Length: 455
Image (cartoon, rainbow, N blue to C red; front, side, top):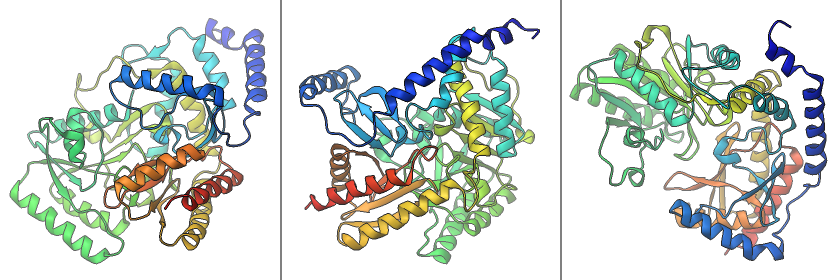
């Protein structure tokens, strides 16, 4: 060992401490075995804490959720003593569940590392190794790490605009969600998210794929695309798309639909940007654009959520000039080290392919939801989505009823979220890295009971 750091990370005391922490966590997390109601003695103080936190942050929490710091895979303990199934995973972040033993060793190494957070000026070898892994998974030429999905998307926009200067418009699909920064709010197709904000980017929208009207939706989208191209000749820098629309309602795209539009877009020299902040790692391939065989078209892609550290990936032909991309923070050292380990597991442990765990989990949910639809034909439609993106429509699909049902599910012990408008759906981004069949069966029992108790 030539480096002092190697001696530190391989010190027997560090390994012994790591083993002791792993044993302690394993012992205590094993106590969380099933859904549990709140502790009566903690309910009042917990309510005061939730109210206080809402006041501090200037708005109510979506759910009265404050974690205790302990979980067990798909189960999580809250500060009121309750235990719930977490099927939204921090909106897709905790793909490998709560209190994962695999993350202790990289976290310990990060804790004794020289820096708490890495950035553009100072990065350790883990950042390089993680970047190389993302390039291997994507087939792209370059990888720029960043600290959030929004920042990754912002970087992609800057790369595309610089490469296509002076083009200043972009193409996007209806119901798109790109983020909530000033620029990304201009793309996100939800008026409430940009209320009171100036329009930062000029966006022209295309209809998304409709599986019930395949030919009609393709013809309509192509017609609208040609109209935009004629109205603003040579003025579009890029087309941004989600292979599966996430916030829009878990709507998968279609290979023929995408390829037809993308061929037309490429005729105009317009770049294509695949926003994979939500889809990355959740389908039968690492990237959604690979699932739809779009490798020849995609110039940029972004990832986030389950990757922990986000990234903008791009081809060499659009490599930006010096100074365009730079930022103080890449990510916490603990996140970079944990991401490197978890992404290696994602690559090597059977999550991908038509028989991979992502699709097997989807099949389990599908079978269980089909049973629910037969049991409650007037209360549920679905399932929808693909891979590790699962959703159903409760009742008439109104936002009011979907939100209310989600709150009831939370109280009963299953954490979900909503997606889409007209209809609004209940969505799951389950922790596929740790979820079991038994978790799904028990959670579906809770969903069924919640439907029974809902008028």
